[in-house]
Length: 118
Length: 150
Image 1 (spheres, rainbow over the protein chains, first blue to last red):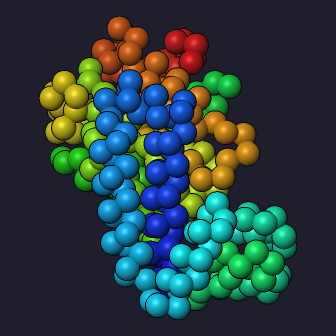
Image 2 (cartoon, rainbow over the protein chains, first blue to last red; image 1 turned 180 degrees about the vertical axis):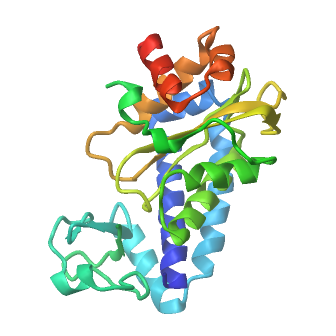
């Protein structure tokens, strides 16, 4: 896997975790079952997200920041050849290619970074 | 929705080799059959969640959980370590029973929260920790879920 894609996946997963802490029912479970303090947890997550964002290559970082500001997520999984960001098909050759996650690819339709899920 | 529908026998390990929390998380992630890179990313995410606060809910039970792009559907696993693992749990006791839950960020059927809630509810049943200690096979684990109606 391309190291920058790995970073992007980590960032996207952390955004998902962040979202989970803002989502009322899930936040309630985190507080009541796991005794988590959401405000402190969000601060920790934000600091880590900032740190990881700075480790992105400048070109990738620019696109990542732009996408994060305009879309709900900057990285989209590809399942069965479909970008799950915009639900438009990606080129068939990309999906069947070995080592398809060894390079950075973006969706031609929505511009999100793509991650091919097996 | 029944919890038993999410557990496969291959994702149940009643004799974890792990001695530490990190080793336990890695061993549980290993039960999901993902490739090496995905396992590494998932482990990092679970560690990050643990760094926000332990998922050891007390009564010798932990429920590490997160959302991650590396899975394409909700996955669960169960691991047991009778001698216990230090998980920095709420009650400060070591953990014997670990339920792993991982879901993709985009989940059409939205099962993550209900599954998390049901496992937490299951873990709070008074007799569950003891019964989890007594089971001898993965099939008995599934039977316990059925018996408790979760």
